[in-house]
Structures are given as structure tokens and as C-alpha cells.
Image (tube, rainbow, N blue to C red):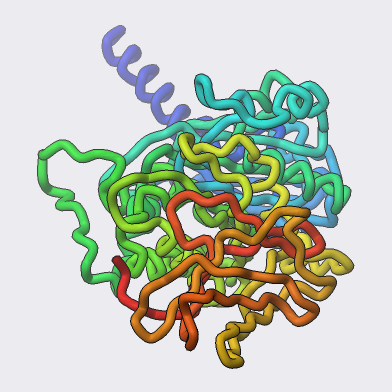
Length: 469
């Protein structure tokens, strides 16, 4: 009899636990998080099977109700107001949990490889310019940070490791420098809370960051065999998307920023398709429309052997007009010959912010792009170049233009004399009587010297389409 009573008591406990299982949320939801303003923001998690979930948001005291499925999974959208906070969100399936210190504002995903991953404290013996002062003065309750722990998987995951943190020196020092400078400028300019989600892994190619659905048009990419027991690394297609992006897909965001390309530099033609391919893939997976996406062009660096990295920079430049609502920040002036991680991360973050402030938030009165070649005309032995994004003119800030080369029909390039004029730049060489092509800064490592008056650099470019060598 005693054994029967014990069995019934145990069964009752188990039944009660199943009925009132504690609500659990993926790491993207937590105290101190930022939700995207003025949208229907999804919240999801797990609870008891088929249980009723009630979510109450303190900004409007509205309660939403949804039901968990047979696996205990549920999702509910809540309507967010204009930027503000802090607020509370309570979630209950019979047992109450509360999310505190929640802000409403602008949310951006920040991804890529080592130049996005590089923290404000820098890498060992590789500093971030001005970081000590930036960290010391970083306390700002209107900026929140979360760094996703590096992981890889052959299957799409539902959670990752990470924690929302307040913006203060002890947290900022270990956060992405490019992302921080981007978010800081947004927050100061827009005067609203900003949430930054950093998901990056140094040295990785672009293919691991694209989901399986994103490779339908890229038949040269070999997807990993999920049934194989062979070891795989972080360079395999889909594995970083599965582990570090998929768990937050659906989280309401304003857009994404990206800094990657070095590991794909020997395949510029493929990368020119993969970059917009990644963006369209993420937009399709998120299902919230064609959100803004801006990326950094890789900075000049002396790679040595392999394809001239100027062709990869060209691929990134071409990709920036391939689809709508994207843009590229040029870093031609901040590269370092012997360090692939430029110290001037403020330039990267702030130039991404110029793009967002202009193209996403509709602000004007400032420039968001460096000079871009509009057209070339030939007059005798002179190649004349005209530029867009140079309304107030061009400048070198006192330097000589030494990075121009010119070629005739023999396709041999010679160093050129280049002069800034009222209409653009005139390029000549005594060795080329009949020019047909001009190139600017088209080498692995150069120090960009051509800017618009607003101080934004021109990308390396060429007017020819001759074979990549």
C-alpha cells in the first residue's frame, strides 16, 4: 500500500512539473535587452506542452496569449512603441518570469570575421586606435551589447550562448570595436536606445554564414554531408549560420552590418555573387522585409601570393549596387601593410553609421560615401574622370596623387600623372599616347589618397574589364 501511495505521489509531482514547466527563453531574450521600436516583435520560448502562455508588456499593460505546441514551443508577437524604457515583460504559463530593464530602440546584427570580432581592447600586440579613452568614456545606459559565443553545427540550432550587457567600460572593452563605434554614433545622433548583437568568427569565409536555403543559385558550393562522421571545421558552408545566426532569426531588427572578405580574396568573381546572396538569404530567413545591410570593404594589406586583393575590393564595390537597401563603407586610407587588422576601427564603425543614418534613417546634410567613378572620357592623350559623391570637390589633403596607372591598347599599365580639376581628375602618361584604361590604387597594399571634401575615401577602381590575374 505504501509503495502504491509513493508511486501516485511521484506521478503527481511529475504531472505537476509537466503542467507547470518553467518558461525558458533562448539567450537572445534576457534582462537588459533591446527590442526594435514600432514593430511587431516576436518573442518565443519553451514551456509545458500545450500550455497557455501569457505575455504582458509594461509599456502598454497589454496581455497577449498564445499556446505551446506538443513540443512545448511557442511564439508570440508583441507591438512595440516608440523608443524608450526601461520596461518590464512578464511571461507566464502558470509560473511567472520577468524580463527587467528592457529598452525599446534600434537593433542591429553585427557579423563577419576577425575585423568585426576584434574587441575594443584589441588583439595581443594589435591595438584599436583611441580605445582607452573610448572605453573610459563609454558608460551609456542607452546602448546594450550582446556577443554570441563562437560555435558551429551541421544542423540549424534553436539557441546559442550570449548575454545582454550594459554599456560600461568593463563590458565595452570586450565588445566588437567596429560594432561599438557604429552603435555609439547611431545612439548619439538618433538619441534612442541601440542594441548591438555581435556574431563573428575570425578567419572565416562567407559560405559558413549562409543557410542551406541560400545556396540554390550557387552550384559551385559543396554543402557538407550531414550524415558523415568526419570532423568538420568553421569553414564548412552553413555551419556558422546554423549555430550563430539561426537561433536569433525572427528577432526584430533594423538591419545588419558586416565586415568580412579577407578569407575569400582569391575568388572575387564568386564573392561578388555571394555577398548579395548572403543578404538576400538572411532577409528571406528573417521574413521581415528587405532590412538595411551595410558592409566594410576590406582594407589594403600586403597579402603576398595569390590574386591581387584589389579584385576582391572591386567585387565588394560592385556588389554594393547589386540589390536594394545595401551599401559599402570604404577603408582605403586605414589599411596597414603588415597587419590585417587595421587599428582605426572608429573609421569602420562611423562610416557604416553614415550609411545607416542617411539611407536607413533618412537624414541628410552630410555625405555617406566616398567618391565613386561616374564616367571616363578620352580627349587626345588625356583620360578625364568624373565622380559622384563629390559635390563639394575632391582632395588629397595635401598629398600627391601617386596611385593612378594608365594603359593603351597594349594593356600595359604605366604610372600616371594625375591632377584634380574642377570637373574631376585628369590622367596622363608620356608613355601612353592613346589611353584606353585607368586604374586607381589597384594593388594589394596602397594608402588611399583620394577623398571627397567630406573626408571619405574613394575605393580602388578600374575602367577596364580585363582578365583577373
